Image 1 (cartoon, rainbow, N blue to C red):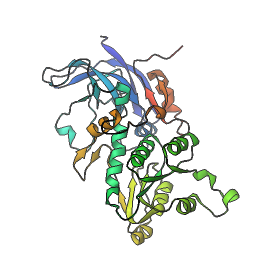
Image 2: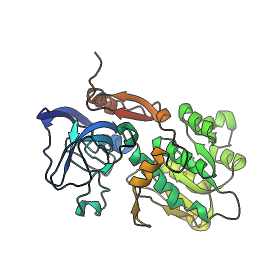
Image 3: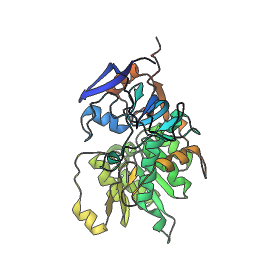
Image 4: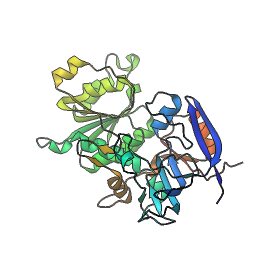
Length: 344
């Protein structure tokens, strides 16, 4: 195996470089993994643009949506062999990594976590585990199982990858779902699966006068027992608060540094604002790695439709330009394959 590798580095906001560095050497308690697949997450784009709270200057960046293969195993590591398919590797915008993806809230860092072996899944399937785990966490923190007087209803505001996965999970549990999303190909997927969809850009003064998308959702779908804010803007947060039933929950998952909350509206409605962590339910003291991987594998139910979320697969060289020109409107999930070479 080569002694050097290619990796992306994010030294400062709005700057990404393809560099060559030494392949990391695994310690006795570590695994060296070949990164096969890493999904570009919205948090990675936010880090690149400088408006996310996470800072990631190391080679490989914050690349956490990884699927990998073990190539070297430390002498103290048990249960992992060369060739195993691995979940939970970090620093994924690189050809190889020893870093394990931790939750970043002071828990896993203390116990030197290991990657998870899942030879029943391809590395690309494994790379969706982080997004799926986040969606499961959002679903469980909404506690929709407490609704027993009427069919539960949920609204998803923003159909990025996690919003689309969440929509599938909600529908699979028999929950009525409406989604607000401006981009037609994303709405089309949710509608195909059974959600009622709305385009917020359809409602302008010229076409609907004073009629807004909020009024349309209320009239055609109704207020919801849970609203999932998946965009990360104050405008969509205010929409979510307006759409939730009195006494119920808004799940705030979109990432923004600061928020302006309408105290009077929240107080009068008795709205609960819940901020799910990524892969961790701090209320239940659990993480979702195994549940997410099992759901991807279809254990105990229907497999998630993930292939339809992949817009394209690109090399590290192509990923540089992808970050500089990231197209939130057209792209859903971009998969980077670090060992792929750009086609000439």
